[in-house]
Amino acid sequence: MGNKNLIDAAVKAGVQKFILVSSIGSGNSAVALPPQAMQTLAPVLVEKEKAEQHLIDSGLTYTIIRPGGLKSEPATGNGVLIEDYKIAGTIHRADVAQLVCGCLFSERANNKVFSAVDRNMIHGQVELEEFSLT
Image 1 (cartoon, one colour):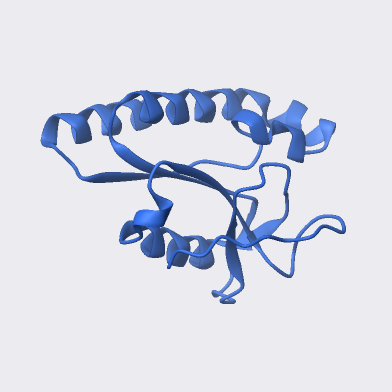
Image 2 (cartoon, rainbow, N blue to C red):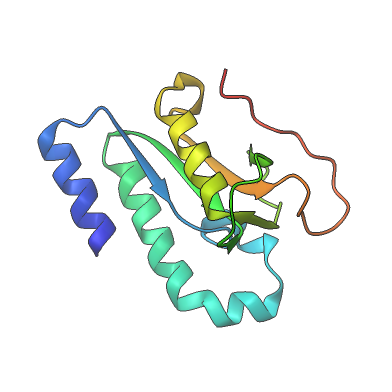
């Protein structure tokens, strides 16, 4: 409800761009989480998905960033945005903040949904196609 209210207020105020930090496991990225994690987080992820959809439907220019598991340690500088919704991993909160700031002034990030992980903390062996903001 809080995100819905913020999105509605942004529309009313004529905000140029809205960046929503959500979570891997929301929307189509549900396939990225193991079943146990999905079961535990399901109620929260349903609400995050509602907020994401409300933002998409709002008409605002948006970027949705879905971080993986969050760590409360200093930034590593290894945070990356990935358009592949099947990727999961962890990332430091400070790296998520850096990615959000990068998206703010990047037109390439407009109307996109990203997963955000630390390139060195991805679950499984995957080919990584990092999104470039420039």
